[in-house]
Image (tube, rainbow, N blue to C red; front, side):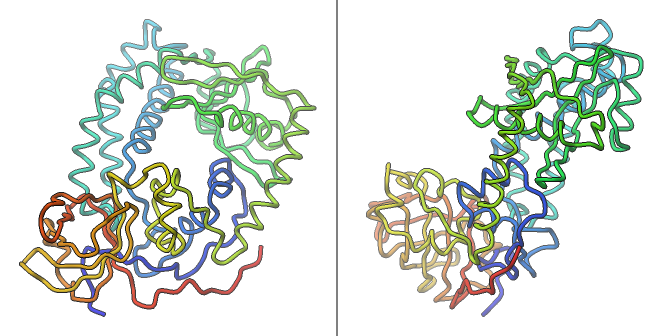
Length: 417
């Protein structure tokens, strides 16, 4: 088959992901929602890129949260290092001024995210559009960052700086520690606590910063960190329990009851059972795909999922999903203009999708190598002129499109964990 530059292939992994050595909150949550999705994300795709797993797509909400989160961590570290307890400390203004202000810190994080597009073949065509979108979100991100810092309290003590610089060396002593990796060696669960504070009086506070709206799972995640802290005998050799847990949202600080030994033991038993179920789900090759109209349209690897592209219309059309942002698979027939092909529809997530249509490619970089008979999966598109004959869809630089290899198969030997 002719190679098509600037167009990724939708094909099964070259090597399916093995079972993870360590379980995390997000991996467990995502696997329980859809084992196939989690495995497709983590599997190997030789020839596509040098990174691990499938090249991640762009999520405005997810990227926004990571930028705000990283900026908060950066500013809070500087404040703590300078002995400021809050952003309202008299010295905090000088600290923030030296850093260039909120916009400068956020802008640096935006540029860091943009630079990562160069090594990601899935985002190279979208780089400029991604940058413009993130820059438009800057005022909103600045407000979220200010609101988070407004409710953030840092333990003030002269010994704090030692904790800031030597978090990786082992036991945590009096001070503030950011992005602390905690491990439960018995269960093989791990996680990163955003902030762990240890006071001279013996109080231990774990803070989890959240940049979005509160979710039901937030409290469970914080309780997991309390368990990991209690069982991590490298960070916490004295086996002290956390005394305070805080969920920090923009504009709200929500305390969570710190668990005692009995609660931690119950959580430990629950995680042991979940670990077994999750590992068994990931042993299957390919893992089970949970096709649902409320989750599949938001899956970033659905273009690789054979179960999604063969699902019945009754499942995918439930609740009207796909009526305005359609995923479709088409077969190119013949070129009717330089940048326009006539095509046949093979699959669509919207009802009454036309069987024959015209596809206009506004980005000429994807045209080279296309030929009649090629199958393309086009994500989040729409019929722009339903009255024309044939109806038209447009593939823009920001439209994700993938070429489907012929005789695509999902065969592989089962792995063992």
